[in-house]
Length: 173
Image 1 (cartoon, rainbow, N blue to C red):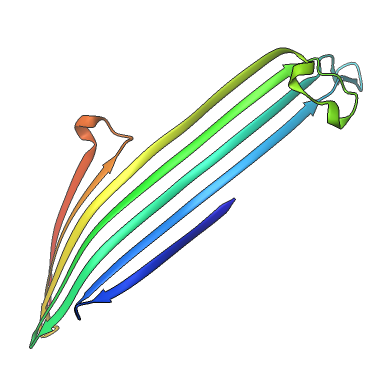
Image 2 (image 1 turned 180 degrees about the horizontal axis):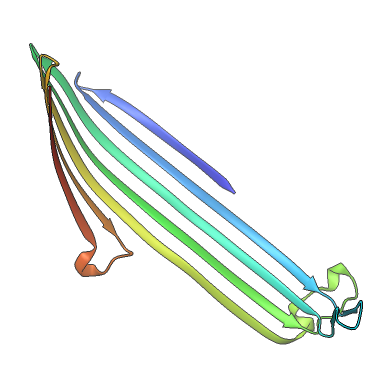
């Protein structure tokens, strides 16, 4: 499994900052299970050997970018932030099984040596996108106004309801 994030900040034109980050979570797993023929007691027994191989894969990533303008004009302070984000979540798993696989040695556990072979697989993929903006204004660092707008979209929702819009406003002193 590999997980990590990298980012960069770029300050330019005195009052602007561009921030960008990229992160990911990448995983791979494999499980091999062999259940041999055995007789321990009259009740604890297994008359058919079974070999199972499971392979899972995870691929998740996120990208975020923001641009910030921050300036002060006498008693007035203005900070504006615009941003964008995108995420993807992906998982796949496949399992193959076979019965009557001989128990010769660990190196001989192959699905092709058995009978009643079966393969199942499943997975999921979802994506999220976001766009957002915020304006902060203060007068003498005493009276505050904040306005925010955010739009979030997800592939998990139907096309008619894929996006949600979330405005807000705040006042303080």
